Image (cartoon, rainbow, N blue to C red; front, top):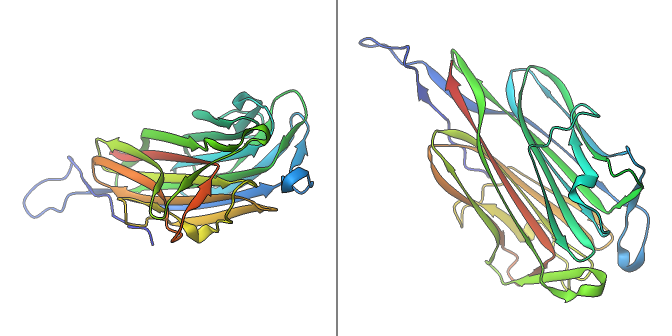
Length: 291
């Protein structure tokens, strides 16, 4: 279970003997998740789905009842030679909202990362991962995670504070077929990333681990953990997108933390070695400020 800490901030407007200062409090407001996995069989169990130019690969809506910082993180896995610019994260459809995009490539396999953070009024908002390449493309798997934070207390507002990102990809294996992997012993850190905040913040961490068809073991969701600090599990949600013998695992956590440096870790806790094709770890911090 995730470690939860409340964010409390004294208001400069409050004062006087015996007066309790007003508080700005950052809270998890809501979250949403969706995934897709290809259904068209291909060699070595690499199922895929074809998407025409302009087609929606994956979408997910989130409804908020307060003004919130809304953070969206999307991952696309494809065993084809594409560029990160071939896909977009949009909200609404046709409006690009990407604040950061990255590609974790390995020969003919890529994990594409898209993330955004924005302050939105109450309502329902739908995020889309879209093919904007100008041609038909094949996608093996995709995941889309959305998390909203709200600020309570009079009068407070939510703001983006900072973010951090890291990735890894396998280095050994069948290069010709893009089946690269790296072996991680039990309790080994697969990927880690630190983030430094200068104020108390709502911190969101989203990690993905991809295990492809060349893996000589068959990992399951429980084999890995998202930890902060190392040895302390902070997963609020975990999901598995499975296709034939490929899996894309997602681990996410949200917690309220005082100003400091924090390191999140994706760790092998399977009890034996596991073979990983690729992994990504995104951390976003938002703060509540007095207005």
